[in-house]
Length: 286
Ligand code: PDD
Image (cartoon, rainbow, N blue to C red; front, side):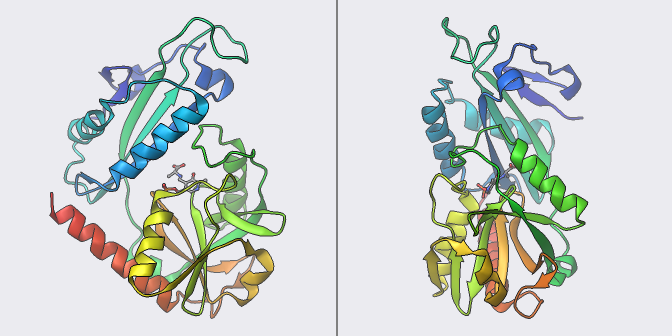
């Protein structure tokens, strides 16, 4: 039986209802965060919290998040996910319920806070070893995608384009630059150099992205944070996406053309092995 959290109450999903005046519903006026847990232990929770706080500041949404960690923990318990290999908590905060107008409500309203937990099943090693495919899709998003807003329509359409094309990921391209995925960050590998777009207003500062950059440096790999031109992909040796619900996903084909040899490469393998080892250690320390 599953339970979700809504404004201080623990409810069955079908009982959790929001008023039609919620500004998240009417205006996409809200923010969200997705935090993974490995065998019931949240991973990089502090970084997710910091990103949420920064976003709330940028959007001027003033919610009390002192109990947020407690809610995360309780979601795992109430949904019997404490022993799940991988699970994640989705948390959303909107500006609250008010008569519809574009500007903020003049009388302060309480933000709406909603959260649920779900299990995540990693693809089998066999599937992972075969690699995944992607297509490039024009990036149609606004100019502040560094804020994790719930306003995801361009991401939805991009991901659907990938589904329609029968591929796994959508690689968003703007002005000839491969920025990130519809719900994950993007890396290309040239020899032993790992390249990803620098954090700026045109990508989400992925928590997994940051962790993988650190991991790559620890493994002695060269890391370059710079824009990747789409044309460069023709001579990339490897490519992969990263994210909370992606982990490290090797991409062996983009727009029908093989990346490098068309097989999962050694750098991606090394990074994934190190990543899994870290996660194992993290989970074991519970
Ligand atoms: N997506 N880029 C975009 C556009 C994203 O939506 C996400 C996360 C990422 C990866 O960030 P992180 O490593 O912190 O998960 C990059 C979440 C998981 C989602 O929308 O469900």
